[in-house]
Image 1 (tube, one colour):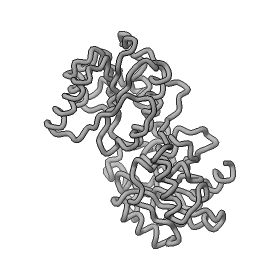
Image 2 (cartoon, helix red, strand yellow):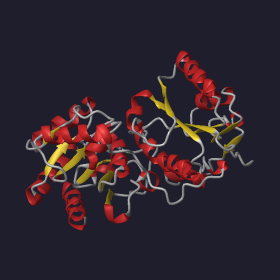
Image 3 (cartoon, rainbow, N blue to C red):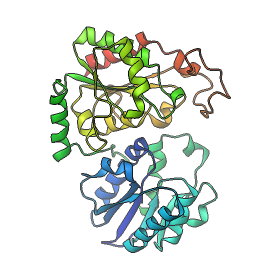
Length: 350
């Protein structure tokens, strides 16, 4: 692999991943580039709906919104990249289209994973070895900046929780009738129903923790999480339902004001880690070895049954039979009592 060093006072485009959690796990790379090459103008490119996470990110030259996957959207994005005349582009996303756009961009240095038959698109393809594939996503992403002569070792994930977004988050906390650091932010949704822990068991654990500590339970999420929310509230109606009422740009600041975050393996879990809020996370089909929140061990608890089939390919339900509740065995084995115990344990230690 050649050294893809970027000239002094050059510019770099970081084409970030397509999921909120993956963006968080790529932020150590952003921070490392800013730390080791402060002379570079850094531009971040991401899906438009995810850009609010980055709108107050310090020390960057700007952002580029990616609207969709159509030919017109791709052509528009390519045009913006070409107009930027970047010295290098680093592609975190693994799609074939992303590699092709990088190849056509005119950037003299192009770094990306050589997966999906796209290695020849890059001047510096990074091999996705079996060991790398089985490693934490943050370690995978770290390999993409090594060809630039930059290491993210010792760099933690980061999202800004300041300025107008922090002010808006504080206003939201007040409007919900709760107090800073006296509530637990709870996210019970997931990208797919079988990936989400039982809403009712989340509620049972929340009721136990609320009774034992007096901390308010605040449900966060989007309008798409309504089925989960409704099931939860049937068991524990004394929660604060903030779902659909906290825009993504405000969410990091809002979670930073919580005493604790509790949720499934999901984007909000990683957002919590990026603002330093302690996390209790329930893992099922996914693997903590690959996507656990990047927090010190004393600031997180991982609830995970660790069956021999886990992590799986998440081809629900071709590799395992669902429980009567429609969940895979790895989630079915996690009781609400175990979850409540982990929450109380972390509250006590922090």
